[in-house]
Length: 111
Length: 110
Image 1 (tube, rainbow over the protein chains, first blue to last red):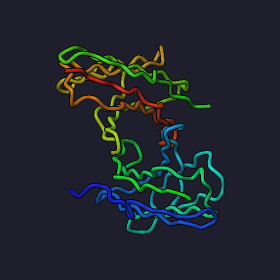
Image 2 (cartoon, helix red, strand yellow):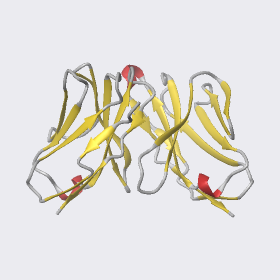
Image 3 (cartoon, chains in turn yellow, orange):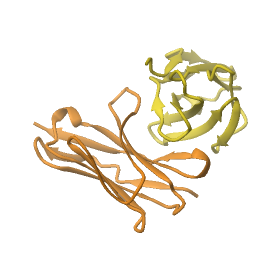
């Protein structure tokens, strides 16, 4: 089976812009979770989607949003980018939401 | 606040030794426990999962869970330089809410 894929792999944006990241889960997996990873904060949970519904949400501002499509692919959007949003954004897929398998991540740099 | 605590390290062991990584968690309602390995510049990869008290062995890796003490550990036997990485402890709560520790950086010296 193909693993989790994320696009793009690298992204450079400027403050105030918005960005959309994409994640395709492992075939058959219906749960997609998003995480932000920074050297100072570690892996921080953003949100989890299961069958197009957001089941869990972490402690991030409303500028961070996501959605899941009927084919389980998911997108994450960050509006009004800030310098502190520079991070590695990781997507993880799971059959039920328990054991999670990570994609390669999208490295976002905000200038 | 649901917290997962790990010693950040770095933990350094000689090649062939046993590396012991520890993790504590705050919520007694925790259901599932995982260890991930993350090489520098890469994404986390799953090593082990454990759900019930006791030991679970997979090759050179042994995960140990003690729910009464809210403690989970990972032992790596016969450590190899290729085991040098950051090890992340993860705990899931209700509704599959997964929280990660900050990770322990392990260095295995030849």
